[in-house]
Length: 88
Image 1 (cartoon, rainbow, N blue to C red):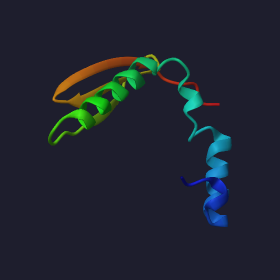
Image 2: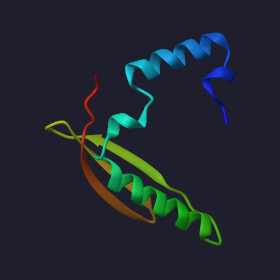
Image 3: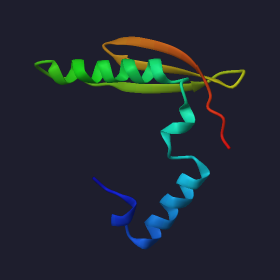
């Protein structure tokens, strides 16, 4: 596993700045994306258990009113509308 300490100094500084700005933390999604995350984990388990080829594709579209539409493609489509996280 790559940690910030294992990265070169330039990459480490960039990663720390991004984390401070909140761009790389999953904490910003809050509870808004929990159904999407749960379905994605379920689909990943299904693909890994499948005896053959499988793929998963995630599509995100920006909607009005600070919302996003997340479409998970995995043989079928699973559509979710979530509130956009607040960027601080």
